[in-house]
Length: 190
Image (cartoon, rainbow, N blue to C red; front, side, top):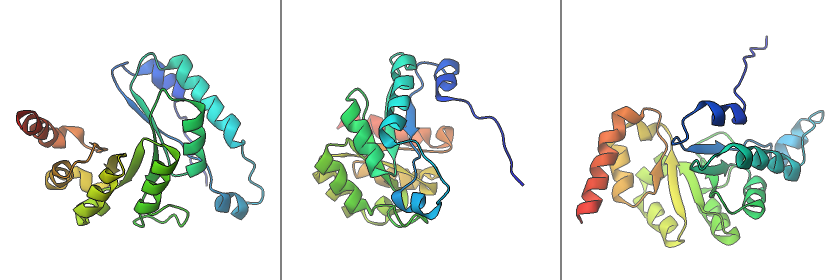
């Protein structure tokens, strides 16, 4: 049984949402292994795939804050080479997910640094379990953003903020906003 529902297009999202709302546009594209495992799968080449996304963004973004992210390094590189208006980040679950093609945090950081990406987006458990990793990532002069279940808890966000994280992706903004705003005030006073 297939469950289908309509999805809003990127163009509709730009049109329907307020212009002051920023977008993290996460690009999903199969890895080489995934393509090989599904022999009947046909896919759009990376260049034309990225071109169609960028065309939609440039025609509809209207000054909105946007960044691109993807688990696929080829997508990240293509987006970085094709435009410089918006930051590009490589995503990694750093071993906490199921994707065997996913880079480790160190490999993602080295890749981002080597090809001039703006940074990485990684699973927050990694950064909370070892704050030295965040210090290493910051030494590469790349931005670090985290996502994950831990980002729903005040103390876990506080640990990351105290150690220099550049951003956190959260599910329940209203519940953690006081921690984020409180940290901004603390930084501004120092």
